[in-house]
Image (cartoon, rainbow, N blue to C red):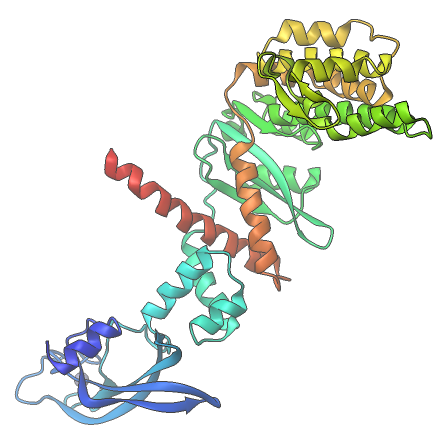
Length: 437
Ligand SMILES: [Zn+2]
């Protein structure tokens, strides 16, 4: 490989019209910082004049001086690297105007190479702050955002047709501000993100962007129980079934069982030694109480501190015997858990409809009330395979992005970054699957 070709391969330049001399790499400074300058020459014989279009025969178009431009390249080694490109100038004898040689490594009037843009896009797909991307690519944060914006234009959400199965959720993006997002529950594609999550904003968004016919085609919308989207979904998607994410149902009763345990436990925090022993056991074995009864081991003897050699089942039994309130709540909790896990709607209904045991804690009573209110949607969650897993996975990644990509005071810029992040990620993930297919 020639010297020139080695340099080209090092900085990923394929343009055959660019050449490098032997001593083309020089150390220098730019804006007070050490950097490398690579000087190259861009020249060729144009076939036509770009202004008037005349064919270049017998020097109709002749070479006439050069123009130097500085183009930011990806880092080589540790220092920012700039290409000082001596671009050929041409003069046309026919129309008497001049023009500059072109190269595909940069766009017109642009001073960062396409490779740097690619690098910015790859880095934006990772959870990196604008500042650190800017530093890695030797460009300003504003330029990073501009590159993201340029790409995001092509990734803009298209409100063409709604998928049959949606999933709604929200996330915090700035001090106290919540954003609303909806995805296709089947493939996890983000369909759009709004900077507000109130019913008015949501209603407006769907009415403006989708026809009633489109909205009528939506079959299910999966939500979590805390969100007040029920009424707006009924209005917007007249035929859709609302599905409450099952994970949230379990979480709800889980939390009330735990609160009940804590209140019983705190009553035992006395000067009495026997009470304190119970207190410590209740404090330590909270997980066993929350665990599904059928998953407790009744065969494996193990050493448990505060107990000694025991079976899991016998530990739970002993703890429950400390307090009738704890026991009553535990029985109800286990029945609800079983119904939810086995998707046994009749069993769930009977747990909720039968009058509750007088010893049931107020926490559990509140949960029962909430479950009762959402009963039809819980029923749907037993009948459909959809859940909010995908949208919550997305939200977790958005939170990471939010933490590192601080400095997003502008919601639109933040949204573009999120969309870029996920579009690039999903194409990355989709590749291996299509290869095996
Ligand atoms: Zn011309």
